[in-house]
Image (cartoon, rainbow, N blue to C red; front, side):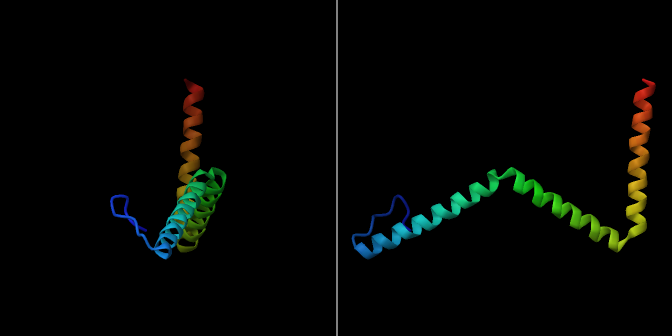
Length: 86
């Protein structure tokens, strides 16, 4: 593909090749934009990645994960109690 400021090729085969390269680049751009705009699919991908990360972390160190979960529950309970007292 030629840059916008370069002279265009005069050879028909070169022109066809330039057009095909432009089509391929445009196709990749459209695919990338479609992927970025597919929010439900991206959210599902991130949820699966988070789940896989959590499972892997649990397999590597179960006590640490259980301790973190217990701390999270304690924080949530503390916030609920604090808000009820206000």
